[in-house]
Amino acid sequence: MTTTLGQRLKESRLKAGFTQARLAEAVGIKQASYQALESGKNTKSAYLTQIAKILNVDANWLATGEKPSDIDLKVQKLLENSTSPLLNDLHNNEGRVWVDVVNIRFSCGTGESIEFHFNEVLEQVSFDPRFFKRHHVKAENVVIVHATGDSMEPYIMAQDLFAIDKTDTTVKDGCIYAVYFEGEAMLKQIFKEEGGTLVLHSLNPKYSDKRVTSTNGKNFKVIGRQFWRAG
Image 1 (cartoon, helix red, strand yellow):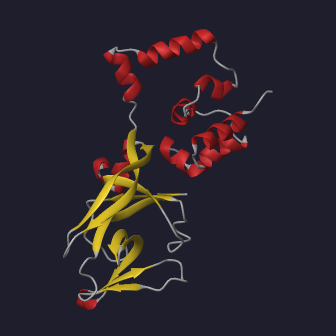
Image 2 (image 1 turned 30 degrees about the vertical axis):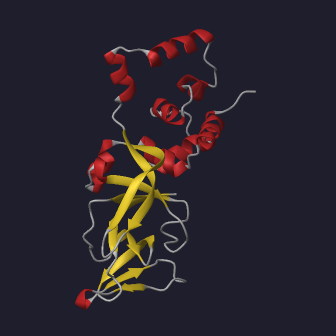
Image 3 (image 1 turned 120 degrees about the vertical axis):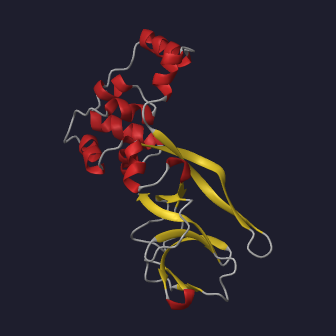
């Protein structure tokens, strides 16, 4: 059965577990540009080869619907397994930067001995290097986390991805941070008040603000500043 480019894109994207927003971000294009391809409004794109690589499908099949021949598959396998330094550089160094999607875990001791761990990697997402320059962050300082709960809706929905700079832990008034407080990790907008009190604000109005003071904030810790999210 003949399929359209949009149908092949959607099929491949769903199998790979990507939302349209996440795939567009990984490729480095606007979500609307990707939607135009999947909806059939556009039938050509210079990014199809890159999309095919991210979705782990054959680029020619994605573009034309034609399955590769046995010879094509054998040549591709030889290229993938080649020990040639040049071929390996071309295969591995295509200008994309891969960032871990992690589970944040923390361990607590006495006093303020709270440590955060990012070593449970769930998957990876790739970005154009310009993404990091645009957000004024270093790639090695960035981790991505799945949002849980609805306290930051509608800005961040449950199961959305959000990125934090784990070295940016000095609170700036009005910015959003991943923090540890009252025995759990959470994402909150933080406002500063006189006397050093911090207000942890949820964007969903059904949740009340939390206040961090010198009395209850002994183990309050900032994990990192949130600077990007994708649904």
